[in-house]
Image (cartoon, rainbow, N blue to C red; front, side):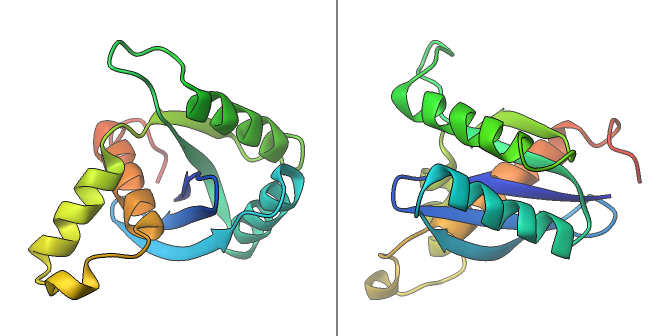
Length: 141
């Protein structure tokens, strides 16, 4: 089963997708934020285009696991997506995803001048891979 992950942001949403076995996460696209409903429609379009069976949406929690402004925005986006598709949507703690994406870019040997810019799709890939690794035994093939 393919899984799609969303790293929601105020300006852009990073999107990653798994391979058909739900084992390996890969960056897919970065969507510019327009409005919650239009963003949800674009995500649902990708879900149907790629025959996705589960959507994982990154949710930023504070150091004590409590909700933040960003996590409440993520929950509202999740609800907008749910209203447009029957594909299940799960919220997943995305804490540290941007820092991990930055470290991944460094590990891939990106020169310092190319390390800037958005990391949304790489952060979404990190979110998805941590989800896949944590739920390996629970995902249907």
